[in-house]
Length: 260
Image 1 (cartoon, rainbow, N blue to C red):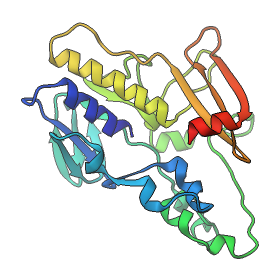
Image 2 (cartoon, helix red, strand yellow):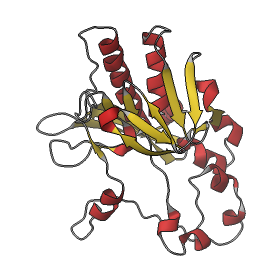
Image 3 (spheres, rainbow, N blue to C red):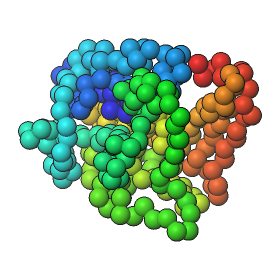
Image 4 (cartoon, one colour):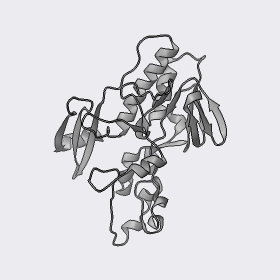
């Protein structure tokens, strides 16, 4: 979501003499929040999956492949062994599941958070125990440092989303943005989208010689489905001081209708 949003916004802001290139691993976009609607029969897979090319504006080059590494000092990325250079680089890798890191989970578990798993009925045709274990979490005896060392989250300026390397930005799930009380900024599609808008404005302004960088102000909203045709709604200023200023509205049918 973040990468395609940056690409579309830049294409609107830049002249045709400037190239906008998007590297995408899957070649398709999945609207992940709707996977559970497929599970209960309220959506069809084709309704939540689109070819990435259909979501992009004309004039955006698309390279389908996997980014193995980036060189921030030279704003280059290696895609399937091929080096691609640019004047500006936006890292928006998202997050992925890695059940293979837990021995036996692939064989004994059933992943509902994937297009393939959500349409499988096998898990619903026999007595099933669902075990949900969410990481990272805040508790005295749990540390997520080893996981972060294996694939480091990018530290960025929380307003410009620029890394310590000029011209290199990072948005979405692969960023680490501390809040005033020490926790990290929650990661959602809305956050990635708004960060993408800020980055696109900044890059376009620099290319066009304008002095008006984009800013991500820390505001975000979120819907929470509560079942029974109801949903809650929350949002606010997560950059608030001394604490984030967030308000949550009780679940109701009104918020469920807005979400749908």
